[in-house]
Length: 95
Image 1: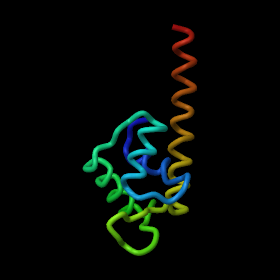
Image 2: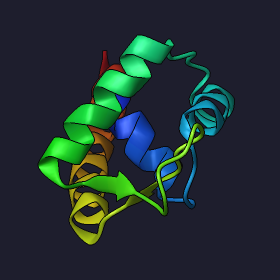
Image 3: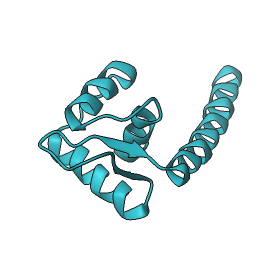
Image 4: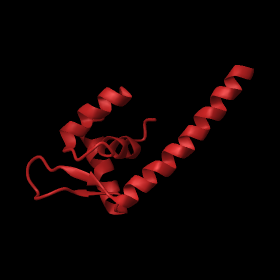
C-alpha cells in the first residue's frame, strides 16, 4: 500500500497527529518515507473530500483528525485491498 491518502488515513485512524508525526508513523508501519510535498498534498486532498479536518486551533504543528466519513472510506478501501491480497496470494500459490 503506497497510496499517500490511505497511508495518512491509516495513521490518523489511531489518533490525531501533526504532519511530522504522521510521516514518522507511516515510515514505521509501512516502511515508506513520505516527503513533505507528498504528505501535504495528500492532506489537502483529504481535507477537500472531508475525510480529515484540523483538530484544534491552527498552529505551526497543526494536528489533524479523521472524520467519520474518512473512517468509512478507509474501511471500504482496506476491505477492497484485503480482497485483492487474498486473491493474489491464492493465485501465486497455484502458479
